[in-house]
Length: 344
Image 1 (cartoon, rainbow, N blue to C red):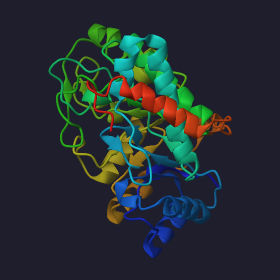
Image 2: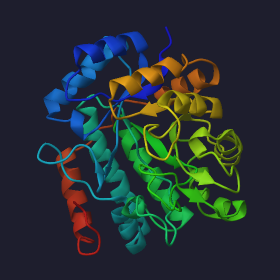
Image 3: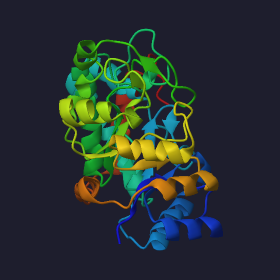
C-alpha cells in the first residue's frame, strides 16, 4: 500500500497511544523531529524505530533540520555544536578549496551523528542568497552572496551528507534570501522583476537541480504570481521550480502550519498539493492539525510517487570515515575564523 503524501511531526519524545493510532491509520510518508522530540541518542533511536514499526515500512524516512548555528535540533551535551552556514562562506573566501573541504567535512560529521540515530534525511543545504535589507531569518545561515559560491558550498554539503548515508533536502525553492519577513510569522512579498530574480535569487538553485529532495519557500514573488506564495502557486512551482530551475526531485512544502500561509490547515494542504508539491510538511505535532493534513493529502501516486521513490533510491551506505580525525581537522578549520563568525 502506498504511503500518504505528507510528513508529520509528533508532540514529544515518544509516541503516545493516540499518535500510534494516527500513524497506523494515516500512514504518513515520513516523520520530522524537533527539539521537543529530542532527549538522548538511545531515545531517538527508539523513536525512529517505533515510527517505522507503526507504519510498517523499514525505510520510512525520518527527517530533521540539522544545519548548525541557529538551526540545530541536536545539540550539546549529546551532540557537537556545528557552525552556521556563513562559516563555510568565510573559509571559502580565504581559500575556495578549504571552504569546500570544511563544508563537506561538516556535513559528513553531521551525517555520522544522524545515521547512528536512524535519521535518514536532513533538511540541508540552503540555496538562499541574502540581499541587502532582507529579513534576518536567513542571515548567517547563507553560504555567501554570489550564486556561484552558494551553489558550490551547497553541493559540498549535500555530498557530505550523501557520503554519510543521509539524504539532503535543498531549501527554500526558489529562494528565501530576499524575503522581507520571517515566514514563520507572516507572508514575505518580493517585488523584484523576474530577470533580477533569475540572475540572483534563483540562480544557485539551478546549479543544484539534481539533488533528490527540495523544499518550497512561503514567499510571494510578484513578478511570477502576485498572490500565492511558492508553496501554493502552480506558476512558481511549474514555471520556475520545475521548468526554469529544472528541479525534478521530490518537492515538499515548507511547514504548512507557519504564519505565512492563510486558511485552515486542510485548505493549505489542498492548495500545496494542487500547486504541485509532492509532499506536505506539517511540523508542530498538534493532533487536530495532523488529522486535517492526513484527510487531504493523497496517497502517493503518479509523478509524486516516481519522484519520491527515485529520491530515496539515492541513499547509500556510509563510506569509510574516521570520525575522531575528522572532528580534529574540522575544529582546526573553524579556529581560523572563530573571531569573525560564531561557530557554536
